[in-house]
Image (cartoon, rainbow, N blue to C red; front, top):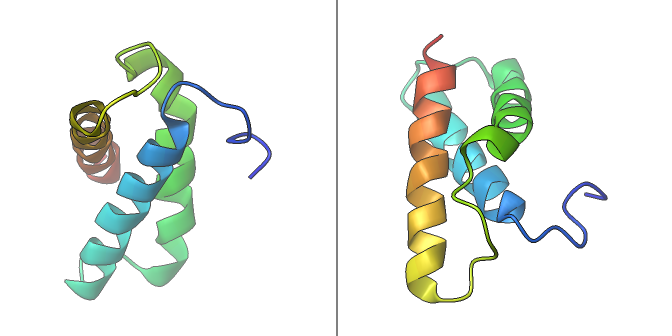
Length: 79
């Protein structure tokens, strides 16, 4: 949580999106429960390299950041 506090890169959006992807995979039977947190951590660690930069200021920005994070979660989740 402290890593997100004061963050202006949309990391909280990325964490939420990664968690939703991981849980959906778990519910679909394609991810073990104990692999949810590692996927979220992988997205958190990769986020500085892929975030679009700047602070999300509008709802549209949030949707863009969310989409990028979900794509990232899907890609690192399949590796």
